[in-house]
Image (cartoon, rainbow, N blue to C red):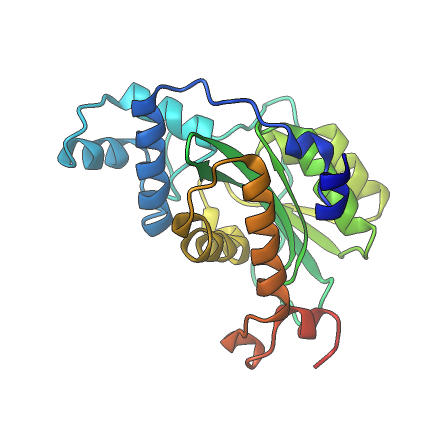
Length: 258
């Protein structure tokens, strides 16, 4: 499709199936997404209590199911709601105490929930840890491995890191994903279970994306989401100044243009 080629996104990311959740569940998901962005240590018990205080009489089983569908889990240790699989190998976290002082030392990746006016999609991004530069991203209406692979391949077509850090979701622990990294002699690092701050750089990116773009707009179509998020990442990479980068942009630091 010509529109996909112009946007630089996969055709699978363009096609959108309407959400099957009820209007109430979609509303609850919107509310929980915003609240989790503010309070990422909220697991299902606190989220359930908060929703009840807001006047929504929901039980913890519904909240758990919706959080699982959104790919959300609280940072504090708790019953696991993520998508991990006992069949897939988990790798140790390699970044503790590591000095990350140049581009392509560490890349990181994660998936986040993106609300739309009448549904939702998922966003995956690959980011250079040191420069905060977003190397690639993809959108999908399911949290499958394929759209994560498409983002990975797009990033690897540009360069490759020494270490690649993710959470323990099945998309990133799958043989397809880990084998691709190992074939490039890239060391694999994974967050500890329930420790989203192990991947703090991309967590900060998600907050920026949501507060500066997603929450200001109600995307009517997946094409609107693709255009809006694509424009946001272009601005983020090339125009947004970061204090931690001595007020340079991610592109200036990653591409050495400063």
